[in-house]
Image (cartoon, chains in turn red, orange):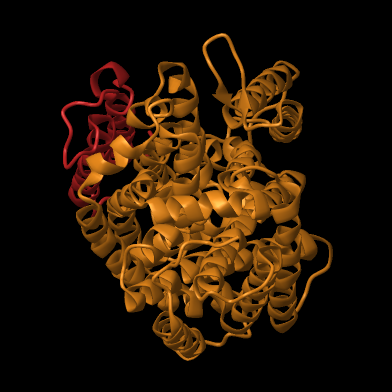
Length: 67
Length: 517
């Protein structure tokens, strides 16, 4: 059986989760609550950048030694 | 006509020139930094593959965050509205896609000595024609992206010259700015190669982060907060800025997804990933790149912030009829800064944005000249190491002229240049990305798929005069439509071949993509 890599499976799942997080338009496509006068639409997606990076970094870190 | 007085003055110019001189010094110093023999294409183009985690992070940031981020996205957000905030999900997704593909490509390239994606495709599918097509499509797609960088550099120079109050025809100033930007780019790339670009990339990122962080705090404070900007938007237009109009959801989603697939197919992005010193570093550096996207958010918001700065807004409105609506919109970030921040700070910011176009353009030009020499010319005529390198350097100059052609040929907002490149480059997804996961695709079908993809993509772009195709579910980014056609042709072709007795063979084993041998 060919060699399997958990890293790629984990990243694939993370990508799907990330696409879902950015597809919840009814949830985030709105003005309120504002943060520093910026509508929710903008800052929700900005926070999700940090969430994405955290998610990807965790996976990369956990599987960093994997060949 | 009188453009409102900016805070640009001789101090701004002096700061700009000193920092730019330092940048040029770094570019030359970079050529001798961590000494390698630049006469080898390998050294000039891949920095000898000795770059560490932080440098790879910077290098990737340097070539992925470009005039697209500093000029094109803010201009489009200003001109069209929240639709162009799609760049944010794009940035998040593209790095996940990079992590799915680049470590594999890195590993197989190490194992087999590849330096471009076309090298891999050639072996994987046993087809030099497919490799030629992948290289050619990569090169053509990169040209409008380089053009976008030149447009960004031009915008900075126009703001600087207009701000200094130099009398003369604005149209002439605009054209002179373009020529200066182009000459500097050509000279810089020719002399330093990727090493120079790395070191200057670090300098550029430091300037950009400083500019972005200071301005995103200082400017809203100066105008009384973001809500002032939002409430200054004429009420007829408020709905396109406050949220995403629901009829644009499909356009938003497809722009983000298409762009996310496209980015790591560009030769320069692949080149950057292959420069990594180890797979571990590549994974870790890439996973942190969405953080860079936060800078992109702040810059994009300049497109709205400018509504709170009446002088900046009227400067753009005054310039619109003279240099064109889109070229005026390109001034969003430079103008927002020039009308609110102190003179010395404007100098720093303008240098940051200027080299923010220059460094990526150099990296892109290097990447596609490597590709041309290695995967197209040498397919027909082998060259010596020295001949390879000399030719690549000269070709990088030629490509910049070709890119300049796109500046004139593609009308509309600057971001259209990058989106057009995206439509084209996405068509190399089946042989490169799918090729990293399977070899069970037939070479002629892949080639036919790419031809159909590129032809339909470019055809639809010209037909609709836009990067969108209207559909019953809303407008869709043409890159995805063309990719779907491409995949259908590849799939059907492979099935027919299989039925007729074709069986997949590959000179690359799956283990060679996963493990260092």
